Image (cartoon, rainbow, N blue to C red; front, side):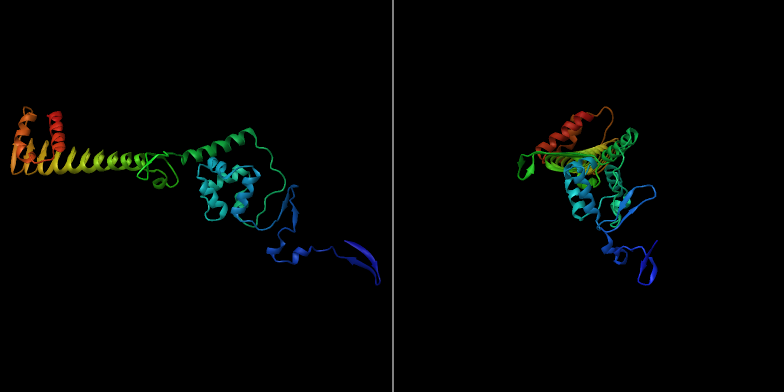
Length: 310
């Protein structure tokens, strides 16, 4: 504090108080600068939302939305939504952004926290390696391989491939096409954990001719098979062939139950108790009344299976 000589003698001079001190917080931003005890200068700037800060940091690094999306293993549309304020990233992605741009989570999430003016020191080799490892781990945890052919038939891509593990697993790993391969697939020919179509193959298969651990279809092959013609360890259908088979018209198996049943333990209106000496010809002769009006391809499948099993 200094003293000055005025008209009334020595008067104390009061240090000038910044005008900003009397302004509302919403108007102080951009006017005050403070120094920390450690010499780092922090500036309180204009309120910036997360979306504005993200766009600013990305441009400062010279990265496009596509490049940032690749680093975080998300879609460019996700980055665009973050920067427009339409959506917020999950905590894992926020942490990755914080480390990628070397800013705090407070800075990213709090509108009134401004970044440090002094440049961040260069990352040490160990710190850079840890950061890269963490980002790679985050990317690998949400990695989805996708391919869609440009050629289309009836509006569907000829080939669609979607498999892996994504943030929205069902949507990101659903493949739809003439030939579809994915965690979840729908197509004329579909392969996946859960598949549906004319010829589905998967853990769970639903469709025309289905092949899977659990299969449901007009013709179903599987450990558990349900269909018009069902072939499996456990088979349920109009025509059923399996270790345990139950059919409306025909059942062939170790344990069989149907109008016409063939097996070691057979129950039905007509029964043929089979043993190791029973041949496929004998079984086909016994089932001739039930099979004579059956569609030829289905009768051929039953004949093939019986010849293979017996």
